Every structure is written in C-alpha cells, then in structure tokens.
Length: 171
Figure 1 (cartoon, rainbow, N blue to C red):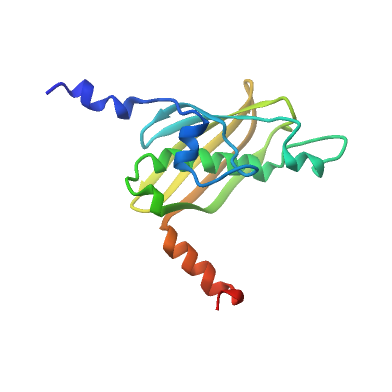
Figure 2: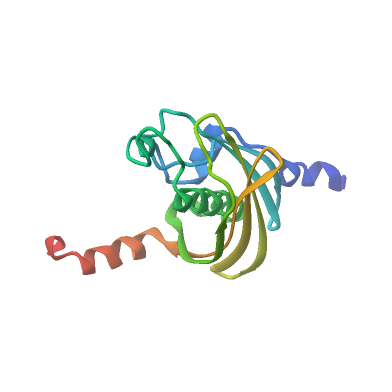
C-alpha cells in the first residue's frame, strides 16, 4: 500500500475561513482567526488574524486610540489551538473545546488597526479530553503577546446541561 497517499489528508497545512468555521462554533464578532497557514497534527498551528478598524471592540477600546484588548489576543490563541485539536476529533459537531486556564500571559506591544496578527500555538500536552498549549502572537517579527492556555473537550449536551442547571430561567 502506498502510505504517502494514505497520509495526504493529515499533511494538509492550511485552512481558509470556511474550513475554520466548520471546525469552530465561534462566529462574528467573536471568531478571531481568519486563516490557518500551517498545521502540524497534534503539535502546532500558525494562524492569522487581520485586525481592521471595523472591529466592534475598537469603539470603546479606546476611542481615538484603538488598541486590541489583550484578552482577545489570548482568545485568538485559544481559538487557533481549538482548531488544531478539533481536527483530531471525529464527532466534533457534538463537542466543545472550553478554555479552562490562562497562565503567564504577557503583552509586549499594542495591536492596532491595520496589523496582521500571526498566532503560533504549540501543544505541550493533550491527554484524553484536556490540553495545554503555549501561544505567541506576532505583528511582523515583533512579539505582541504570549500565554499558556489550557482547555477541556466536553460534550455540547453536557455544556448546555451545566448552563441550564445554573440558570433559574431554565426551569
């Protein structure tokens, strides 16, 4: 058997916005990655976020001096990591990757309209339904932010059930 032909789908390295949207449940205005440039299964992903003046958060952060909120840069790292991990899950339509932690977040330079954020995420561990990843965001060759993020894979029905139990209007 020709193994190279069998491995071709795993070797796919890029994803466009439509392919990203088939993996992630996020939508505008909270989908924070536009393209995947590189994807090495179970190891690494490089994604792009084109930062435009039309981003809704710039209206209030900050009027007259727009700066992308650091928490959204970290969220973009988590979304890129989610794409990487969800490519490995066959029944991903019934799953959610939930953000469970942020460690060692550092913000090195402001990200402003017109910047292109290159997000590099490396998996440091992935066991069963939990993962940990180190992310770095760059503008050009300058580091803008970095963080270690952790996540957990859960059934969508379980996530909804947990929300319903916590919500008094669910009764």
